[in-house]
Image (cartoon, rainbow, N blue to C red; front, top):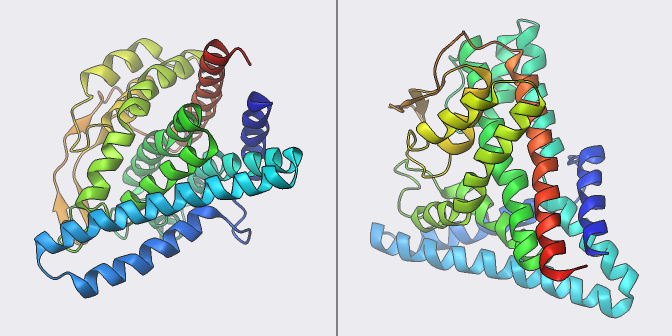
Amino acid sequence: MTLLAWALAFLLDRLLGDPPHWPHPVRWIGALINLLQRAVRRCCHSDRALRIGGGVMWLAVVGVTWGTAWCVLALANAIHPWFGWCVDVWIIYTALATRCLADMARAVETPLRQGKLAESREQLAWIVGRDTAQLQPPQITRAVVETVAENTVDGVIAPLFFLLLGGAPLAMAYKAVNTLDSMVGYKHEKYRAIGMVSARLDDVANFIPARLSWLLFSAAAWLCRLDARSALRIGFRDRKQHSSPNCAWPEGTVAGALGVRLGGPNDYFGERVEKPWIGDEQRAISPDDIPRTIRMMWLAAVLALALFALIHLTLTGA
Protein backbone atom coordinates (compact mmCIF):
# COMPACT_ATOMS: atom_id res chain seq x y z
CA MET A 1 0.00 0.00 0.00
CA THR A 2 2.91 2.34 0.65
CA LEU A 3 4.25 2.12 -2.88
CA LEU A 4 0.74 2.38 -4.28
CA ALA A 5 0.32 5.65 -2.36
CA TRP A 6 3.59 6.95 -3.81
CA ALA A 7 2.61 5.99 -7.35
CA LEU A 8 -0.88 7.47 -7.05
CA ALA A 9 0.48 10.73 -5.61
CA PHE A 10 3.00 10.93 -8.45
CA LEU A 11 0.24 10.31 -10.99
CA LEU A 12 -1.96 12.99 -9.41
CA ASP A 13 0.90 15.46 -9.67
CA ARG A 14 1.35 14.50 -13.33
CA LEU A 15 -2.35 14.95 -14.11
CA LEU A 16 -3.37 17.86 -11.87
CA GLY A 17 -0.26 19.84 -10.97
CA ASP A 18 -0.94 22.71 -8.60
CA PRO A 19 -4.30 24.36 -9.43
CA PRO A 20 -3.91 27.96 -8.20
CA HIS A 21 -7.23 28.09 -6.33
CA TRP A 22 -6.86 24.78 -4.50
CA PRO A 23 -5.65 24.74 -0.88
CA HIS A 24 -1.98 23.82 -0.68
CA PRO A 25 0.29 23.25 2.36
CA VAL A 26 3.19 25.19 0.80
CA ARG A 27 1.02 28.32 0.70
CA TRP A 28 0.23 27.84 4.38
CA ILE A 29 3.93 27.34 5.12
CA GLY A 30 4.67 30.57 3.22
CA ALA A 31 2.07 32.45 5.25
CA LEU A 32 3.64 31.15 8.48
CA ILE A 33 7.11 32.22 7.31
CA ASN A 34 5.86 35.74 6.54
CA LEU A 35 4.21 35.98 9.95
CA LEU A 36 7.30 34.81 11.83
CA GLN A 37 9.67 36.86 9.69
CA ARG A 38 7.82 40.04 10.61
CA ALA A 39 7.95 39.07 14.29
CA VAL A 40 11.69 38.36 14.12
CA ARG A 41 12.40 41.68 12.41
CA ARG A 42 10.42 43.54 15.05
CA CYS A 43 12.39 41.92 17.86
CA CYS A 44 15.85 41.59 16.32
CA HIS A 45 17.85 44.50 14.93
CA SER A 46 21.53 43.53 14.83
CA ASP A 47 22.89 40.98 12.38
CA ARG A 48 23.69 38.60 15.22
CA ALA A 49 20.18 38.85 16.60
CA LEU A 50 18.69 38.36 13.14
CA ARG A 51 20.76 35.21 12.63
CA ILE A 52 19.55 33.81 15.94
CA GLY A 53 15.98 34.87 15.18
CA GLY A 54 16.24 33.29 11.74
CA GLY A 55 17.36 30.04 13.35
CA VAL A 56 14.42 30.09 15.76
CA MET A 57 12.11 30.82 12.82
CA TRP A 58 13.54 27.82 10.94
CA LEU A 59 12.97 25.51 13.92
CA ALA A 60 9.43 26.78 14.37
CA VAL A 61 8.40 26.49 10.73
CA VAL A 62 9.95 23.06 10.14
CA GLY A 63 8.76 21.73 13.51
CA VAL A 64 5.21 22.97 13.08
CA THR A 65 5.07 21.59 9.55
CA TRP A 66 6.30 18.14 10.52
CA GLY A 67 4.12 18.04 13.64
CA THR A 68 1.00 19.15 11.81
CA ALA A 69 1.48 16.59 9.03
CA TRP A 70 2.08 13.83 11.59
CA CYS A 71 -0.99 14.78 13.65
CA VAL A 72 -3.24 15.06 10.59
CA LEU A 73 -2.15 11.61 9.44
CA ALA A 74 -2.58 10.12 12.92
CA LEU A 75 -6.08 11.60 13.23
CA ALA A 76 -7.05 10.43 9.75
CA ASN A 77 -5.86 6.89 10.51
CA ALA A 78 -7.76 6.93 13.79
CA ILE A 79 -10.94 7.75 11.88
CA HIS A 80 -10.36 4.94 9.37
CA PRO A 81 -7.24 3.36 7.84
CA TRP A 82 -8.49 4.00 4.31
CA PHE A 83 -9.09 7.64 5.14
CA GLY A 84 -5.58 7.83 6.54
CA TRP A 85 -4.22 6.30 3.34
CA CYS A 86 -6.05 8.89 1.24
CA VAL A 87 -4.68 11.72 3.38
CA ASP A 88 -1.20 10.22 3.01
CA VAL A 89 -1.61 10.28 -0.78
CA TRP A 90 -2.79 13.89 -0.67
CA ILE A 91 0.19 15.04 1.45
CA ILE A 92 2.67 13.29 -0.84
CA TYR A 93 0.93 14.74 -3.91
CA THR A 94 1.26 18.28 -2.52
CA ALA A 95 4.96 17.69 -1.78
CA LEU A 96 5.67 17.07 -5.48
CA ALA A 97 5.96 19.87 -8.04
CA THR A 98 6.88 18.27 -11.36
CA ARG A 99 3.78 19.28 -13.31
CA CYS A 100 3.82 22.76 -11.76
CA LEU A 101 7.44 23.27 -12.80
CA ALA A 102 6.74 22.07 -16.34
CA ASP A 103 3.70 24.35 -16.62
CA MET A 104 5.63 27.39 -15.43
CA ALA A 105 8.44 26.68 -17.88
CA ARG A 106 5.95 26.44 -20.75
CA ALA A 107 4.30 29.67 -19.59
CA VAL A 108 7.63 31.40 -20.31
CA GLU A 109 8.34 29.44 -23.49
CA THR A 110 5.03 30.16 -25.26
CA PRO A 111 5.25 33.99 -25.36
CA LEU A 112 8.99 33.73 -26.00
CA ARG A 113 8.33 31.80 -29.21
CA GLN A 114 5.68 34.37 -30.17
CA GLY A 115 8.12 37.25 -29.73
CA LYS A 116 6.24 38.65 -26.72
CA LEU A 117 9.31 39.40 -24.63
CA ALA A 118 7.53 41.53 -22.03
CA GLU A 119 5.08 38.72 -21.25
CA SER A 120 7.84 36.11 -21.25
CA ARG A 121 9.92 38.19 -18.84
CA GLU A 122 6.90 38.69 -16.60
CA GLN A 123 6.23 34.95 -16.45
CA LEU A 124 9.91 34.25 -15.82
CA ALA A 125 9.93 36.64 -12.86
CA TRP A 126 7.55 34.25 -11.06
CA ILE A 127 10.05 31.40 -11.05
CA VAL A 128 13.52 33.00 -10.75
CA GLY A 129 15.13 35.34 -8.27
CA ARG A 130 17.15 37.31 -10.82
CA ASP A 131 16.06 40.58 -12.41
CA THR A 132 14.24 39.82 -15.66
CA ALA A 133 13.28 43.24 -17.07
CA GLN A 134 16.19 43.47 -19.54
CA LEU A 135 16.73 39.81 -20.41
CA GLN A 136 16.98 38.85 -24.07
CA PRO A 137 15.68 35.54 -25.58
CA PRO A 138 18.90 33.52 -25.02
CA GLN A 139 19.09 34.75 -21.42
CA ILE A 140 15.42 33.95 -20.83
CA THR A 141 15.88 30.46 -22.24
CA ARG A 142 18.98 29.91 -20.15
CA ALA A 143 17.12 30.99 -17.02
CA VAL A 144 14.26 28.55 -17.70
CA VAL A 145 16.60 25.62 -18.38
CA GLU A 146 18.57 26.36 -15.21
CA THR A 147 15.39 26.65 -13.16
CA VAL A 148 13.92 23.40 -14.41
CA ALA A 149 17.23 21.59 -13.82
CA GLU A 150 17.78 22.99 -10.33
CA ASN A 151 14.17 22.66 -9.19
CA THR A 152 13.93 19.05 -10.29
CA VAL A 153 15.97 18.45 -7.15
CA ASP A 154 13.80 20.69 -4.94
CA GLY A 155 10.48 19.73 -6.47
CA VAL A 156 10.80 15.99 -7.03
CA ILE A 157 14.00 14.16 -6.12
CA ALA A 158 14.43 15.59 -2.61
CA PRO A 159 10.76 15.21 -1.56
CA LEU A 160 10.84 11.57 -2.73
CA PHE A 161 14.15 11.04 -0.91
CA PHE A 162 12.74 12.32 2.39
CA LEU A 163 9.52 10.40 1.77
CA LEU A 164 11.67 7.27 1.68
CA LEU A 165 13.44 8.26 4.91
CA GLY A 166 10.48 9.36 6.99
CA GLY A 167 7.19 9.14 5.18
CA ALA A 168 4.85 11.98 4.26
CA PRO A 169 5.53 14.12 7.40
CA LEU A 170 9.27 14.26 6.64
CA ALA A 171 8.61 14.98 2.96
CA MET A 172 6.42 17.91 4.03
CA ALA A 173 9.06 19.06 6.53
CA TYR A 174 11.51 19.15 3.62
CA LYS A 175 9.07 21.39 1.73
CA ALA A 176 9.19 23.75 4.70
CA VAL A 177 13.01 23.74 4.56
CA ASN A 178 12.94 24.50 0.85
CA THR A 179 10.25 27.17 1.15
CA LEU A 180 12.25 28.93 3.86
CA ASP A 181 15.27 29.00 1.57
CA SER A 182 13.25 30.30 -1.39
CA MET A 183 11.73 33.10 0.71
CA VAL A 184 14.60 34.27 2.91
CA GLY A 185 17.72 32.38 1.83
CA TYR A 186 19.23 35.18 -0.28
CA LYS A 187 22.65 36.78 -0.02
CA HIS A 188 21.09 40.20 -0.55
CA GLU A 189 21.59 42.58 2.38
CA LYS A 190 17.91 42.37 3.39
CA TYR A 191 18.03 38.59 3.91
CA ARG A 192 21.69 37.77 4.50
CA ALA A 193 21.38 37.59 8.29
CA ILE A 194 17.82 36.39 8.85
CA GLY A 195 18.09 33.79 6.08
CA MET A 196 21.55 32.43 6.89
CA VAL A 197 20.31 29.35 8.76
CA SER A 198 17.60 28.66 6.17
CA ALA A 199 20.08 28.83 3.28
CA ARG A 200 22.68 26.62 4.92
CA LEU A 201 20.27 23.95 6.12
CA ASP A 202 18.64 23.84 2.68
CA ASP A 203 22.12 23.07 1.32
CA VAL A 204 22.41 20.23 3.85
CA ALA A 205 18.97 18.83 2.99
CA ASN A 206 19.70 18.83 -0.74
CA PHE A 207 23.23 17.43 -0.51
CA ILE A 208 22.38 13.81 -1.41
CA PRO A 209 19.42 14.53 -3.75
CA ALA A 210 21.53 16.96 -5.82
CA ARG A 211 24.20 14.34 -6.37
CA LEU A 212 21.59 11.75 -7.24
CA SER A 213 20.29 14.21 -9.86
CA TRP A 214 23.65 13.90 -11.66
CA LEU A 215 23.01 10.19 -12.24
CA LEU A 216 19.26 10.51 -12.83
CA PHE A 217 19.59 13.34 -15.36
CA SER A 218 22.39 11.46 -17.14
CA ALA A 219 20.17 8.39 -17.43
CA ALA A 220 17.31 10.60 -18.61
CA ALA A 221 19.58 12.16 -21.23
CA TRP A 222 20.41 8.68 -22.54
CA LEU A 223 16.71 7.78 -22.74
CA CYS A 224 16.05 11.07 -24.57
CA ARG A 225 18.88 10.28 -27.01
CA LEU A 226 20.83 13.32 -25.91
CA ASP A 227 24.52 13.39 -24.99
CA ALA A 228 24.51 11.24 -21.85
CA ARG A 229 28.31 10.90 -21.83
CA SER A 230 28.79 14.68 -21.75
CA ALA A 231 26.03 14.92 -19.15
CA LEU A 232 28.00 12.65 -16.83
CA ARG A 233 31.33 14.27 -17.60
CA ILE A 234 30.31 17.92 -17.35
CA GLY A 235 27.95 17.34 -14.44
CA PHE A 236 30.92 16.06 -12.44
CA ARG A 237 33.49 18.45 -13.90
CA ASP A 238 31.48 21.62 -13.21
CA ARG A 239 29.94 20.50 -9.91
CA LYS A 240 31.72 23.31 -8.03
CA GLN A 241 30.93 26.07 -10.53
CA HIS A 242 28.28 27.65 -8.32
CA SER A 243 28.12 29.40 -4.96
CA SER A 244 25.71 26.66 -3.84
CA PRO A 245 27.26 23.25 -3.16
CA ASN A 246 24.29 21.62 -4.90
CA CYS A 247 22.98 23.65 -7.83
CA ALA A 248 25.79 22.95 -10.29
CA TRP A 249 25.21 19.18 -10.17
CA PRO A 250 21.85 19.21 -12.02
CA GLU A 251 22.66 22.34 -14.05
CA GLY A 252 25.99 20.97 -15.26
CA THR A 253 24.44 17.63 -16.14
CA VAL A 254 21.66 19.24 -18.17
CA ALA A 255 24.13 21.62 -19.82
CA GLY A 256 26.26 18.65 -20.88
CA ALA A 257 23.26 16.74 -22.21
CA LEU A 258 22.14 19.71 -24.31
CA GLY A 259 25.59 20.90 -25.38
CA VAL A 260 24.94 24.45 -24.13
CA ARG A 261 26.38 26.79 -21.54
CA LEU A 262 24.46 27.80 -18.41
CA GLY A 263 25.26 30.04 -15.45
CA GLY A 264 27.20 33.24 -15.97
CA PRO A 265 26.57 36.75 -14.60
CA ASN A 266 23.07 37.87 -13.58
CA ASP A 267 21.47 40.81 -11.78
CA TYR A 268 19.76 40.30 -8.43
CA PHE A 269 17.89 43.14 -6.70
CA GLY A 270 19.69 45.59 -8.98
CA GLU A 271 23.15 44.24 -8.15
CA ARG A 272 25.41 42.46 -10.65
CA VAL A 273 26.45 39.00 -9.47
CA GLU A 274 29.31 37.36 -11.33
CA LYS A 275 28.79 33.62 -11.58
CA PRO A 276 31.00 31.09 -13.37
CA TRP A 277 29.81 29.47 -16.57
CA ILE A 278 28.64 25.87 -16.50
CA GLY A 279 29.00 23.55 -19.48
CA ASP A 280 30.59 23.90 -22.92
CA GLU A 281 28.96 26.06 -25.56
CA GLN A 282 28.88 23.59 -28.45
CA ARG A 283 25.98 25.57 -29.90
CA ALA A 284 23.78 28.54 -29.03
CA ILE A 285 20.94 27.87 -26.63
CA SER A 286 17.46 27.99 -28.21
CA PRO A 287 13.81 27.82 -27.07
CA ASP A 288 13.77 24.17 -28.18
CA ASP A 289 16.00 23.44 -25.19
CA ILE A 290 13.10 24.18 -22.84
CA PRO A 291 10.93 21.20 -23.91
CA ARG A 292 14.06 19.03 -24.06
CA THR A 293 14.81 19.91 -20.44
CA ILE A 294 11.20 19.28 -19.42
CA ARG A 295 11.35 15.80 -20.98
CA MET A 296 14.55 15.07 -19.09
CA MET A 297 12.92 16.32 -15.90
CA TRP A 298 9.95 13.95 -16.26
CA LEU A 299 12.18 10.98 -16.98
CA ALA A 300 14.49 11.83 -14.07
CA ALA A 301 11.41 12.07 -11.83
CA VAL A 302 10.14 8.64 -12.92
CA LEU A 303 13.59 7.16 -12.43
CA ALA A 304 13.80 8.70 -8.94
CA LEU A 305 10.43 7.23 -8.01
CA ALA A 306 11.49 3.81 -9.31
CA LEU A 307 14.84 3.99 -7.49
CA PHE A 308 13.35 4.92 -4.13
CA ALA A 309 10.54 2.35 -4.54
CA LEU A 310 13.17 -0.33 -5.17
CA ILE A 311 15.12 0.76 -2.08
CA HIS A 312 11.92 0.68 -0.01
CA LEU A 313 11.10 -2.83 -1.24
CA THR A 314 14.64 -3.98 -0.51
CA LEU A 315 14.58 -2.59 3.04
CA THR A 316 11.03 -3.53 4.04
CA GLY A 317 9.98 -6.27 1.67
CA ALA A 318 6.59 -4.55 1.29
